[in-house]
Image (cartoon, rainbow, N blue to C red; front, side, top):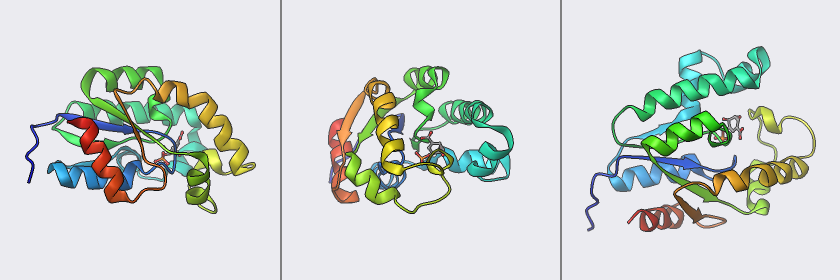
Amino acid sequence: PRFFEPTGIIVLVGLMGAGKTTIGRRVAARLGLPFVDADHEIERAAGCTIAEIFARHGEPAFRDGERRVIQRLLQGQPMVLATGGGAYLDSRTRKLIREHARSIWLRCPLPVLLRRLAGRTGRPLLAQGDLKTTLTALQAQRHPVYAEADLIVDCGDDSVENSAQRVLEALE
Ligand code: S3P
């Protein structure tokens, strides 16, 4: 077996449905690091769901809360941190991530995202309109920013195990 050096904080970025949580969990297990899901931490801190935060307070308030939660996590122990798809798009959050962690963009092709997200509820940005149109626009807007991550890993349709393996190889 391989032994990895302490890796600090690893932050996964990328679109909704790219596998940040499932792949992140596996990567963390392989590295022997804790796994933390930023969305989950935000919900815990707020005491309600992300959909409720968007509905009650709007997206800007969500982004502020998201940044505060991520900032706190970035001051902590080594971990694998999955962020919500929009976190890295916020310039202040992105700066914090760049200063305190290694970031990895999990890049995933549109057809795979579409298949995974079809019929899913709970993501306010996908709640209205045609899923393909929305995701295409998000890709166009976000891909250039995700490309600023320290590493890019193509995940696509691969198994969680294979994708996690590729992340580990990219980190070496
Ligand atoms: C968002 C992605 C979601 C969640 C929120 C907004 C986004 O997280 O943070 O609905 O802006 O892309 P996932 O990427 O984990 O779905």
